[in-house]
Amino acid sequence: MNGLPADTPAYLQALAAHAGIDAAGVPPPTEGCVRVNGLALRWLDWGDPAAPPIVLLHGGGQSARTWDACCLVLARRHRCLALDQRGHGDSAWSPEGAYGFDDHADDIAAFIDALALTAPTLAGMSMGGINAIACAARDPRRLRALVIVDVAPEVQVEPVERMMRGIAACRRFASPRDAAERLARLGARRDRTLLEATLALNLRREAHGDWTWKYDPRTLADLSAERILAPRRPLWNVLPRIGCPALVVRGAHSEIFSEEDAARLARTLPRASRATVAGARHSVQTDNPAGLAQAMIEFEESLGAGPKVE
Image 1 (cartoon, rainbow, N blue to C red):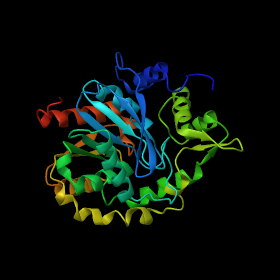
Image 2: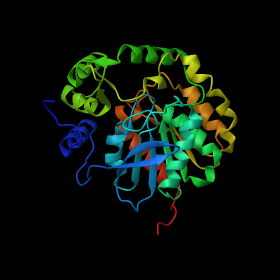
Image 3: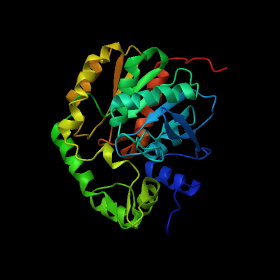
Image 4: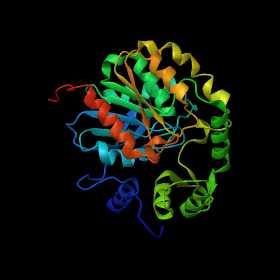
């Protein structure tokens, strides 16, 4: 690929410049792989291994790389573990196509145990937020806090339908450059060179030469908004179990997660606060990563001293 090489310090510097972030002194992440529940899961590891940990969960069809810009801020004070969830990024696909939120919650709990993380903060966006809720409801005492980004067990149906149609229309590309050109026409906010580099990290080349997203197509294939939302609605009933502090984050321009959705979620959680990130739509962590990172930092600071790291 001509232009900006993907997954290099130069790429991270360009990403930081685009987001208005000072990335000086923040090294690129290392990569880890762990086997849980019969699947090899890959993650990116940012920051000091002795710092308070944050486990970061991406949305459906995304990968751990969606958190890169946020981690350039958060890794100054936290160990950030951005996980490729099953069927996404460079993690293994489920042979059975098991991609329900309970399957993901099993993986997240096993991941925390495998890395022996002490009282991590668990943060998830969209699908990752639903998976984080499901995991937290099982044993909130194991978490320092929960951050839920632009999602609830119920969201706005019509924008989700529109998003699913857009995903279905953009599955295959001639190259990362072709993908960048097409997504730029659809409103992607990064400049073309940076967008192409980002896409190169999130696309895989198929045997016949086309490029497609790294995620298992079974995770999103033939899903209507109702088929996505119906299994999630019962999660309203488990929210009162989540006694750890929680932050509900909404992108100020999100159509999928309305102000009413955010208010209901915050009311239902026992110990919730709220933040709205300016200039962000549904994908808050890419639209305004500096704003989201700052909201998370302020939330963490409001909790006081965390557990002592030996």
